[in-house]
Length: 208
Image (tube, rainbow, N blue to C red; front, side, top):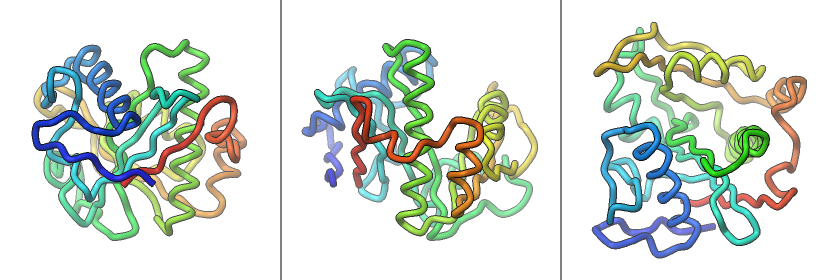
């Protein structure tokens, strides 16, 4: 178990965290051009990177970043509740057994086939983490194209409201239910593979 790095102006002290925050900067700032905070011109962190956040981080044999996701409690400040509640037709889902997937980040230097493989490893890790910790599911905010791709994985995925243009970007909020049938539902589409995040040169760090 990793401990959360302090972010009061200094660089994250842990190599795994440094690699993740560096990758987030390359993906979300350099490639996608998001207007989000950057620490030391190298690390992408925002107001939700607090001790309440959990992280799933897939690394290679040398602790290099392969993929990662940040999980936020929905009963505390989180992106859907604080920034995009307009995407929900009704109240924003907020429960202790429901977390929000944010900063789903795949290492941009990987080949296309490697990116698909680590995507599946990270989705597998998200399912395993939910089942191991008693989560009923996840919420997320994404562009419609990414939402459609995720919904086609085979798990239970429902929109929380219509697609809306927010600050020039079309977004949709959705909820994914996780239960004991989810692994087999995803496995039928080649997404879930038990133990895949602990083999083939990849290892999983669960950080909080």
